[in-house]
Amino acid sequence: MSFVLHVDGERWRAAHDRFVADHPGIVPVIKGNGYGFGRDLLCAESARLGVPMVAIGTYVELPSALAAFGGDVLVMEPYRAAVHADLPDLANRRVVHTVTTQSDLSSLRGVLSDARVVVEGLTSMNRYGTPVNEVAALAGAADAVGVTLHLPLGTGHVEEISRFIAAVPGELTWYVSHVSAAELSTLAARFPEHEFRPRIGTDLWYADKGSYEVRAHVLDVRPVAKGSRVGYRQRTVAAGHIVVVSGGTSHGVAMESPSSAATARSRAIAVTEGVLEAAHRVRSPFTVSGVMPRFAEPPHMQCSLLVLPAGVAPPGVGDEVPVRMRLTTTTPDAVVVA
Ligand SMILES: *Cc1c(COP(=O)(O)O)cnc(C)c1O
Image 1 (cartoon, rainbow, N blue to C red):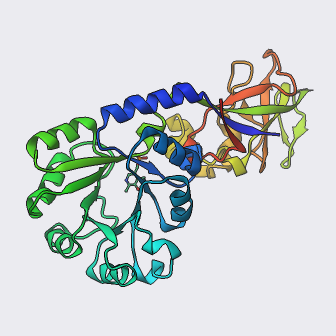
Image 2: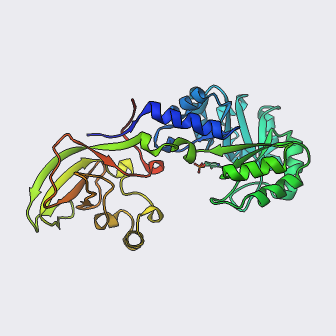
Image 3: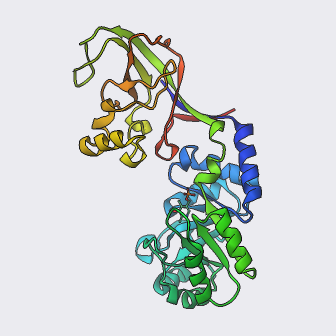
């Protein structure tokens, strides 16, 4: 049984080439499940793209990133002496750390006296960072290679970023997240002496959504009469076919948060019943014979039972069916780049 992310390598890479050309200074973001592609593959792709730096989410991801990418690796979670002081890679000179406090900086410099750092400013995200009026002092004390700013989704960031720039004297590199290409060009025109480097994951890795597809195998197909009982919960189904496909909760099937559910109705169902419990009430993400059938019951760990309505031609065992899923919550069995 398999649940595989198929990538048309040539087309996928061409989209990245165009995206990088349109976003000078880009720092590709590689974190979590590697946006469905896996972090090692994205590290290799970043090396092919010729970028000097990638950004990762956490220190847990650091050893594999250093092994898979030969350039600089920016760790976006802040270095915390209380959490990270014992990690083996702190002294690696290819690492750029994020700091938000003087005491964390001192701890880091105790490990490597010239450790490279960026200072994160506390933006309206209100996640972590140094307040705007303290950024200059910390960046100066740290001889920081730059300041990072993580903005909420959406637009309207130029004024917030401008306030930080006004508060920090000198020419700096600004590593900014979730800032649009239009906002970047406004900033570049307004502050020509500064350098702006966008940290981008989603828009880069999914630049050509037609260049990859998750496909699952059909494992079994069986005609059922109206009222037949199926599955762990012995629910009754309508007449048609039961189609068993690979892909279950362990792959992230039906684990998407309600906000990504397609319609207000499916969101409401997901909220009242819990996402997984609601699965049989909403359409599955599998496309079988041109339709998106419902789940017969919530997905199992590695396969799902679908109900194909009467009148729709059933697929054959071994057929591959496309699956429409958000890749940031997908764990495929394999990623095949052809
Ligand atoms: C995840 C993350 C990014 C990348 O976000 P995308 O929406 O995938 O482009 C950028 N900056 C920070 C701080 C992040 O945590």
